[in-house]
Image (cartoon, rainbow, N blue to C red):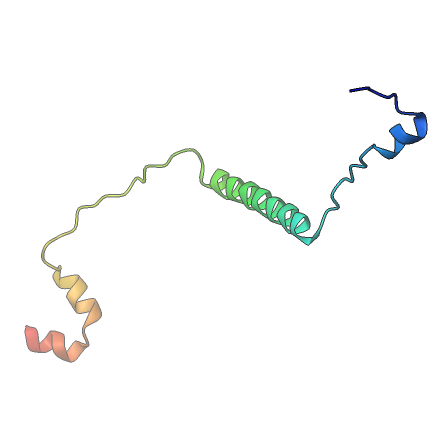
Length: 85
């Protein structure tokens, strides 16, 4: 088998042109989604910083088992309170 040298015109014709793919609408939507997630993250951190660093609430969970007479009197009409007495 004899090997032949390619001339410059033949070598140029064997080159393959690589075309960079163009950005389409899906790349744009991906960029918009990334920006939206980043904005949401920043807003969430700003909201979290308003509450401070403490996470545990300082509330008492003790509830009386029987309603006090003052509470009952405050929610019932006066006729019902008079009937109970």
